[in-house]
Image (cartoon, rainbow over all chains, first blue to last red; front, top):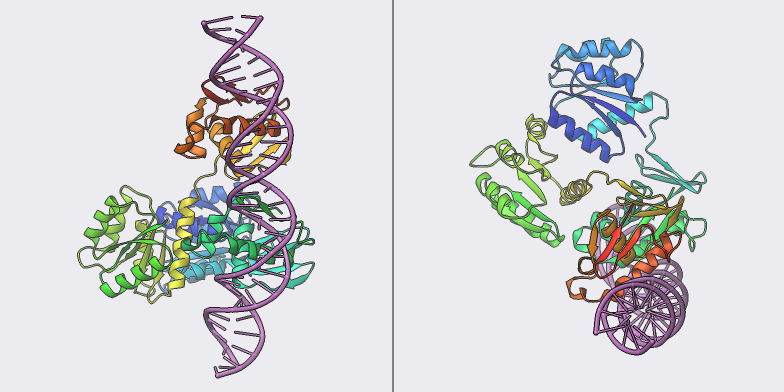
Length: 224
Length: 224
DNA sequence: CCCGGTTTTTACGCCTTCTTGACGCCCCTG
DNA sequence: CAGGGGCGTCAAGAAGGCGTAAAAACCGGG
């Protein structure tokens, strides 16, 4: 699980990023200003920093310097100023990458992945593992004892939903409406077919599943 | 059933979305301008808002502000302007997500599902614990001395109702009408059967229950 | 237009769960 | 002490959910 420290003084952007990054499997630590950011960086195990240069209490460059004094955690700078000197200065101060506002979430996600990948520390773990198989949420890859397992789009969607809620019981309606759409909430038979396929591909004994469990009448549960 | 408020001033788009979303199981409330949107949001039970920023009578940001004044319903913004400041401002104003035109229906559907999922996923609910067993409301999981205990749907519904009212007396009618439906308010025998099953699964001495107590003639009580 | 892969249907046997009935216990009341 | 109502227990039949396999429909690319 990757932990991201987000530093931005605009509460709504902070909130939006928090929601969206969390939805993509990141743990988010928010900070509204430079002081809170430097404090949070010391009290949490941060993997990547996303830093808006425009802060109320101190210059973004000072925050970078304050971090670089003791850590080499990747820093991605957010800047509204298009093509100004800010970027150069930020990179000089020790930032690793930058994104200019307005930015697409996809772009930020890509750079987050790139940053944590460069950090080399495979701390970038959108990986869910079981003794039998591992699911790579970021790359949409499933491997079973080292062998890649092919998934159809629907199979993947069902698996992803279950795997993103480990241990939690996911109701049939929830799976159906998220994967097929709300109109299909009653088509429980689809689920039986696809759960059977997933088990055949992932379980050692598909007839007696260990990780993809049925709770009769209620839903399904992924158990690591 | 998910209800979507769609705000767009172009009749063709409004109509196309209406048809397509309805085909995917959504109930659609259309609004051609900001005034109608704010009105409709108060007269219908809206689950998600899809908002085009370019409106004739008021700025899209004002619509967002008007909604955010009293509701936290997810807002997905439609914007034609690629890479402008609009998106940042919209997120700043309280929008949750955005889609740039032209967009694929699939993309919009995915974001609708994501939005309503996030709205549905409320804050984590607490564990209810007793010396004998623990009930995890969020994950629908019951454990007894570390061992998971399987519950049937009806068993779970009864248990959940009692556990959500710790220490409080819950009348037989209330349990019956909430779990089986109002028509079953007289079928007190069902309760005896299911209380016996719950006790057998959860109590150390099912004959002398400590946590699932009977108040003769009145109802049942969960005591932590 | 055909082909391969994917999704949706269909069919069927098994198993869980719900419902229902029978019975005995306890306590309260007459 | 007898009777009755409420409760707990047990068991069995009915109903519906589940797993599996395989065929049919669908879809995008060559």
